[in-house]
Length: 466
Image 1 (cartoon, rainbow, N blue to C red):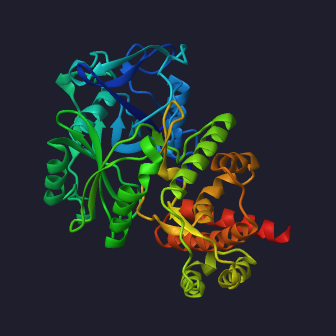
Image 2 (cartoon, helix red, strand yellow):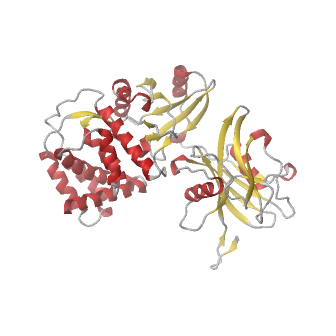
Image 3 (spheres, rainbow, N blue to C red):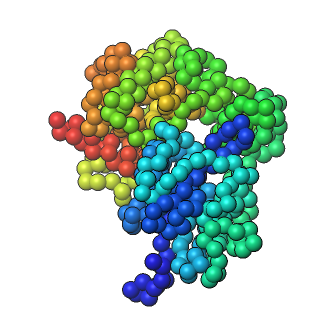
């Protein structure tokens, strides 16, 4: 219950509400469940929802857990987007903070999995929401449809628990102006995209929660979905456009198709692929093995998309980059890390030259799509370049820590094992990439990159000892 904590500070519970949407011949619909049994608001319709289990659980993990427990469907963190927050007070006086989340994609069909708490489940159009709906939940949906990010719903004593338009207590807090970098695509970008694909009815921000990531999902007025991306530099724009025009053909239907590109705007328009990001996906072991074998096949296809070339003789030394990253990352390294990194950097210039092929440059789960039929898709080609093939294993190999079966599956799909020279180059490249990740993650508040860097360094220490 909300109220005074032991120290006198006011506290409230936190609950999470999951908004699942689907398109139907009658328009967009939202999933609702009907509460049943000895629970609050029994007999009324509500979103899948629940309380956090404790301070160890964040709102996204808690929401995904509740979704799985209540409906049987599974989604990953990468499938979740923030909708809004509602500060609510019930008629009896208890208050709480409700976090409403949009679930973009999920696995499985929703079903009743807790019949003692839910006796019905159905999809409803926005104009035909059920009358016997919890007022708190209805307030959240109304605020979401209004485009709000923060709302208050303070009911008074005697107010009905069920929604009643005559006593609607919803109050929307107006949003602050968005900073420049968070605005929707500028008019020139919108005009360019519509020249390429026709009128666009809806723009949805599909950017990663990282600085300089600017990607939108564009829905055509007459149907069709495309992605519009603005690159952060001319270099990245040139690389991605070149990859689409020269190399991605080898991936066939496993890569988007470039519809249009404009160098002055650094923008591209590409087709959409089925599936959801592999980043954060929960898979059984057999499916993981199939995925990594498929990734090996796609990597081999990309590496053979153009003739190999002899490596340049004037390869840049990693020493300068090492010192620059160490200046930031040093306080966050573990004992022995700096010595290991310096040893790897010293070995790098003396390594045997390895033939170069077209490489993806950033092969990792967040740039992989997985469809329900296990079909894989690759996207984000802004870091493609000619380089030794083993460079594409540097970031992906984080998934193989403690999972030799996944490494074996990838190499089986790839069609060959690594050579001794490639193994050595992998160690050097992996160490420098780990240091770069720790440095970038600390300066850009990305703990996932920091943790991946530490895992890689621990693995390199283990290999060095053996």
